[in-house]
Image (cartoon, rainbow, N blue to C red; front, side):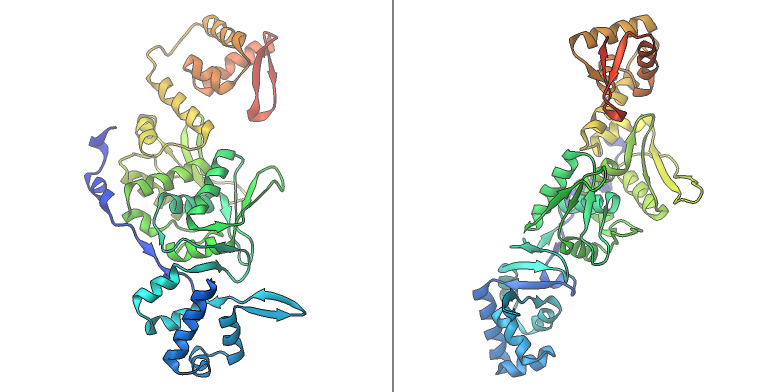
Length: 384
């Protein structure tokens, strides 16, 4: 690693303390369900403080019948029973009357937490701590996700590795129901709305038409910056002729550039590609001289992009940059004689860029020496 290029102040920040978010730090719009025996203990304690259930009801500003339902945690409607959740906003009114140890005890004994609509997180893991998983979830939803009002949030990506990583990351918050569908051509992971409500609140960001990244990311541990940026590049980055990242918001791109630079990695100027009658495309590039440092500091989790970046680095470092076309095509045939291969594998084997090897493949295909199977970016080359 080229340590001379890395700001020493940033390295010191490896020891930055990790922030924790307790139950009182979560948004008022959530609803909680304490474990039955703990819920009973909580309400009896509040009755003791106020003398009666009636007085406690007045304090909460609720009818006594409602408070009785909160205590019993169940109600009946048209012959069906359903759970009754306690508003976190109401619980926060009680906090000044309780000692810290009891509040912590209550926090550790929540069976469910949910938004007004949507599914619950079961046995939530509180407090929520800054972590690689939390920042990666946040980055993925900013880049390739959505969390509209009163809609089930989702993360969309064609890469199974990234979707599986996303689902695994969600487990750091607790147990929850996650579903995966393919409504069009891109696989989508749906998850409970309470997740994005919590993250939007504690990081002060929006997940529908986002306009900034978490401010805390600039003052947190170096590793958290790295995984946050990796998730953004996994979703919105490209590595073909250039290593670049694109997004539709100029403010977010400015913040991404600053965050990359804070890791000692140089970037190009931010470029804006005007698209008539559509949202402008905003992107920035990583210079080829920075590829190795980018790989060490950020890199990819997306398997195809890992390969392409490695190929770009190896290609840049190769000594011989011009080779006889006949020799190149003989080497291609030698590889294909062992097994049919995609373009990326052929480029890797010959230390070529994707752009550099394509003319040879197209000429050999036109002459009927090799055949092309598959479609789009799933092309496999074979000997005729």
